[in-house]
Length: 293
Length: 278
Image 1 (tube, each protein chain N blue to C red):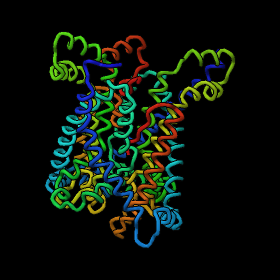
Image 2 (image 1 turned 30 degrees about the horizontal axis):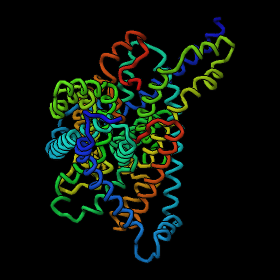
Image 3 (image 1 turned 60 degrees about the horizontal axis):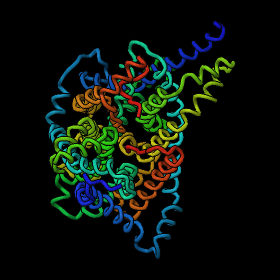
Image 4 (image 1 turned 180 degrees about the vertical axis):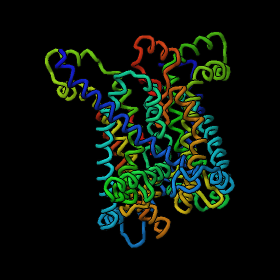
């Protein structure tokens, strides 16, 4: 048997080495950029001394972009929640063909490259001066792009919790639709809303492809400012600005890790209960960031 | 089935706001874009307009090189992520949670930041250049070439694909592999005949998303400003520098069509929902 397991062990070691290399590939440049943002002169090396000068400089130059990005992300998440949650609920509860078509339609903006969506928006609304130069122009682009993530996340929870039966029970006791929606549907789909909202927030804060086309000199978001700084400022400034971006997205990322949401697909944890059960059955197999769909 | 608790009128009222936003700010603009692309001056029909764009040497070169680059990135990402995704799904070790967290955290990076990470690695003051200068005396700087684009696209693709592979790998039936092994199959045979076929749907889905994302990636190319002009960059320059909306529109629609077709193809092959985040 040992002659058999030896090559397997070797292969496992290789796999481990590759995984480590991938982690290094992804993490090392981030660490370097953080260090570069804190060193006096990156060209001469870290040993030359650390400073917060670049960070304060970036803050005074670009703090507007941080606030604007936060405002846009908040507006986007509010709008997607208000229009997306009812839509997801209907789509999850309807078995009709029309519902499936609408579902397909709503996802289309995610499949189209952001640049194309932005050009399309510009060609229709580019002439409306006040709208074009306000932050709402960017919000609109972000809403269309992030809506599918909210809808998908909420619809998944709707489908997994037997809302139909619960509602029937409430309806038979005389609850009106409004009562049911606010006391049964919303509390039950809360995990989906939270997961969707986190995904929408991170997507909106990091969105560049659409935003670069939609922005005006008065509406520079964080990624737009980053592109600016990378192109025209010294490396230390670009790095310090990257630190700012990392600090801003970190809370959302930690929250997502904690809740088991992945930032790209809004793949949401089925329910905390089932997850715990799964972990008890097969310890070590279930990972925290990936939920079996 | 008639559902008394949920009349049609309520359904329509609940879905109307989302549909209205979608129609007003995506569908309608897209139709306008289609019109803009099909009716440039000097061309008799939409067909002729698209023909002119596709036979233009520069645009065609940009389209083909973008497709080739995206394909290469997809293949490399799938290979690397399968090996390490399987490993992470199968083995438990102390720092595993941390490793997965580190592997997935670049998911939230916009393309511009990814471009900057490539500069950190392979730029003029980059790590690879410093190491190679010490080892060989030659400073390797490839951030601003095709190599830089490739590395950047790998950077944002690997986290996405690893997540999918891990999710699929945890659902594999380990007893099948046990059986194959007990019948004398080598590790490679077990992988090729048992594991890979089981992972196929997940790999197709992840590969399609990876390809679509790479096709539409704009931020990374923008930051690196490479000599290779990928299609999104071509669209951007046509629109901003040459103020040529018609060409920019038709190129965007061609780009959109290619990514949509790949995603649709993957979906018909796997039957699962495939969606991209560009």
